[in-house]
Image (cartoon, rainbow, N blue to C red; front, side):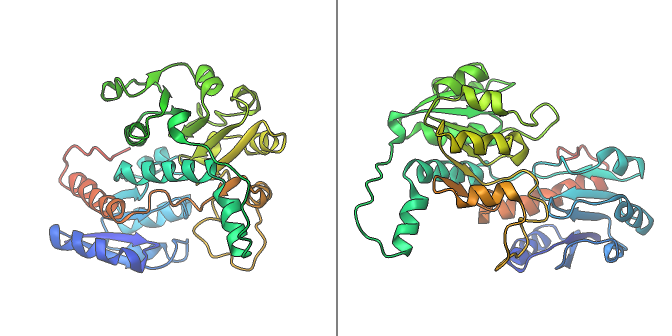
Length: 328
């Protein structure tokens, strides 16, 4: 039996784990319903693999414990793995991996955020909650009449563009690699042109040293006046302080953010009745033209099952010495 230690397991995921155990009888999940810590890392003893997440980046002491427990495979339950110290994991004789899931989950959420921010939904909802049913005098905008710039056309960016195609909007795209599947749907261009001409910019790039603060003050200033910015990728693609300045000055009309710089320790944790400790997040949360969600664009039933099944497949490939498309 190949055991997989699932740290930070959620009761809502039990269904997916049960399905995987039934479909792949070789494996068994050790379900640990708490975040990994140095003092509980040894719960993975006897397991071939450990699954972590961005909410609990594995530190050196944890990795040493897992190595000594016989763990051979450390996987994150996300597509992004920028918080994983891959060289350190590999130096300890373990393999590092990530997973993939339905790109439609994030694509749909990104489009939902576009519609919400361009229709002033934060203000609409606040007025309704206050039982202020007067006409809001806040006309929205229609996607068919706008240009949408898709930054990054990997699996999620590609799916976003395909889904947006049905709205009839003009689309520009910027990416390292052009997708033939998007011929006739998007027009590829350079980033500066995309920013200057787009009414909505949606980010779908990975977090790398090259993409850190991809949208800094200089690039935000190049965006079309009155444009909207949507980010369902990684928070550090945007210089948050510069974004706040662009919103406060009126250069940008609004933003919708599912991810945030320095979100670790804030998102995926209960902070009810507490002030928001991240100063920039607190400012954005207060702004009426900014919609903020807690890094949940991926969270659909389909994506949840995909995540677990691909984690299992990667582990089995590794265990049997086969080529593993999820190994980092």
